[in-house]
Length: 128
Image (cartoon, rainbow, N blue to C red; front, side, top):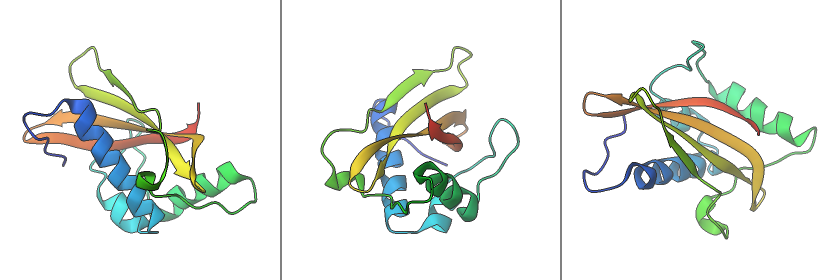
């Protein structure tokens, strides 16, 4: 559960969370990153470390890639925030940092209103 700082805009809170989440992937702490996801996707699917690593490697098509720490890269990774019209939360997209640059692989998160904060959902990772 993500508990926002009351004075922050949601986009600031979500960007900080996602960049920290990418940092965990850069440290190869896939299980820890998965543990920060609160709910399955809207299709009922749950992520696990092997599935997450597989999606990233599938993007590379047989080449080995590594997730990079976003703090080491120039630019912001093009975060995009959309508020759901039904008021249930937000959709948030961010490029995935790979091999020292922002890739076109995009992580799609949902931050859903829950008592005390937001449930974090990794909806998908793919090229948009």
